[in-house]
Image: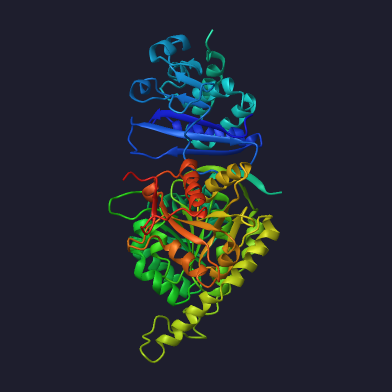
Length: 193
Length: 392
């Protein structure tokens, strides 16, 4: 692991980009890592483009500015790719994970992405299948854990389950279906052949 | 064994308040401090603590309720930010003038106009002469630790105290930190035994009396003396906290300062970012240093002059401007602190991060670059301050 790993999550207000960053940080914390998770607070409207960030390190993190050059970018909503440059600041060996039905090759071609590694997963489809509605953040979490290799998958599932049990006190069925979605995305995420 | 968790600054401050379990909390919500009392009110509603929680109808009322409860001898806390602190204004002076040890969790946010909810230090810097002790926190850990120490400090010196964090950057940023156990916090703060209470009918007192030309000056002199002599108490309580937690706290904190030729002085979250820049510069053999001011009121002028006197050029970072033609408030204080030295460093002022403008590594690198030029005999710009990261 690099001394400091930075992740940027892109979503639209209401899709859970902030929650994804928090869940990812919680799981990394469980492995003894030092973590940060913070959203970029802009105009807080449903559907507006939002970003959130993670920092992970084996040492205490003192830096408190925005993330400019993340090693990982996760895009929760593929329609954002037409609106903003999600690869901004992503280095040539950086990893881009996109929620889409398309293959990584298709995305690379359409978006004219040079360098980087592109991964795709149909997080929206998985979410609809497992949760009955489109909240792609938990499946994206599962996919990012797999391709990043930053944290242990089983532990992440355990930690996320605990966190979700707190969040969904009145809707316990949401816990199992989210865990199912995480596991499905973990299995289905695809890289470039 | 301390419990390691990931919390936002707001969660950390609310958690400290739960462990402190004050007698009274009176507050009115305002972004980005809302969560502190929101989380705290759930602790009360869930029966975890027995605090009397007062939902006030404004910040002015909240501080008024705090004054009443503290005068009755209750351990009293509140939380606010920005315009909320502004609305408390006249009551802030009454709290300090009455020597009431109220503890406030304050989240630094810009003042209107234009309307802005993000971080700068305009709100708290505006209250710097209101007779409150002011402690700035670099991160969530310090916010938590400072809140716990604040109770002891306030009750020892009988002055109100505000502990601040940077809005959103710390208040809404989740990061790794350690918690003490409830018993450890309880033991550290001890039981509050107020010296006076308006409810103590055996020993009747008058609170808030008229005090004209006959005694006002004498009473003010006592208040001033309390602030003038607060420093050793803050230091002592910081050392005691270090024994409990392993985390030491002083008035100021130097980083790579002993042999530094150029240095930045800052408060709050930007200190952490500057620390990384100092490490980079040191790796390149550049003697860069950093001074964090933790306690801004009372202002530790002598301690600051001692650690900065050998530095050649210094940049004072102000996250607010006095809008007075003379730069920021921290700048003025540092200049005054260094005045009594025979050989004084060259000091420049940087205004940065107003309204939450991100202060990144590049900006801080630029400050050190400028300091190097000035140290090498370069000319200073002829204006009160440099403005970092602004379009002009």
